[in-house]
Image 1: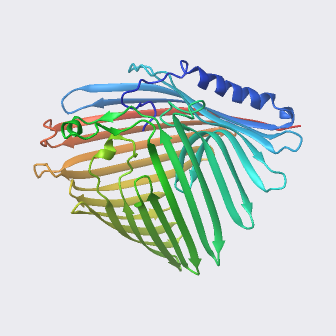
Image 2: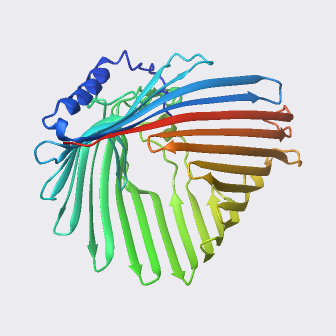
Image 3: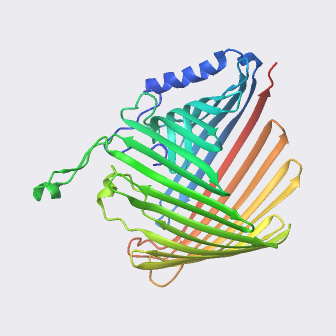
Length: 453
């Protein structure tokens, strides 16, 4: 769910109205600065101010625009305490739209704010606070604790806490939204094997079905507090000479054992050549307690083949061909390109049940001086939907980016993009004609660093 959106049936929670969140954030930052030995620690951080603006003119003459400002901040304090084993990290963002009014503005996001303890004997590591978890099948953001360490060559990790989801839960909401999990990874005769499991629960508004009531069945199909995700994962990796193999298997367990994702990848490298093949089976990522889980879901399978050739440090060639099968239909995706110096030129072709598309893309990067970097890119594509009239619609985009860094503590960047399109009429969109987008992004970032005593 994108930032700023809320679950159906609930009201958005404003940061300033959510007092437990505000108090806890301020308490974490205050504790970091008041912790014993913080004067002897090293402090570093970065502040970035950015403005993003776009103007969009549709083919039906309607025009919309936006001007949004972002302020982000990062803070790291290392070496707190006598043994200097404690550190603190925080990253947050505030944004506001000055042109398009939204009741949720200004929007606040605290991505992470946690204390980290590194055992002086290097036996374990402990994190406490708001943090992002990427541990096998376990992915999410929690307000809680995570501990990891090694025992006889085996890597162990366990975590748990209140789930931070869409900016609405977390901290004191352990009873409403929680996430727990473990991961174990080791090596057996040169083969890396990892096993992971996690469970995510979140209270939602009940979903009832009138059709079920008419049939004499219980009307509630989705109940509050049901399991949102519960997965078991296996990952295996093996390197044998020039051959590299990886396997990943994710199993959903709330309603029996069902494969949600199975992926196998092989790569062989020799004399600048890399040849690879892949297989991917997946089902839609739908939460068990989501209203979408009551609808029919279909899996899809992908088989891919890749070849790349590194001629020298300035020239490389690559190609990729993928076949996708889904619900009785077949789709293809082909990509070929070349890397020359600091530039890339590529061609992509897609076809399937929804229609077909092809296009060219080009990117070039050039350092004008030690402090100035310029990037130019352009893309042209044509597409035809399954409901189209036979004439392809066309899209052309151009982007220019400049990064200026006059010193170690300051960086300025600018990016502008122009997108023009000429759309043909379809059943779902009866307004043919030309339209355009103009997007501008400007940012300034400053760094600071203070070493400990």
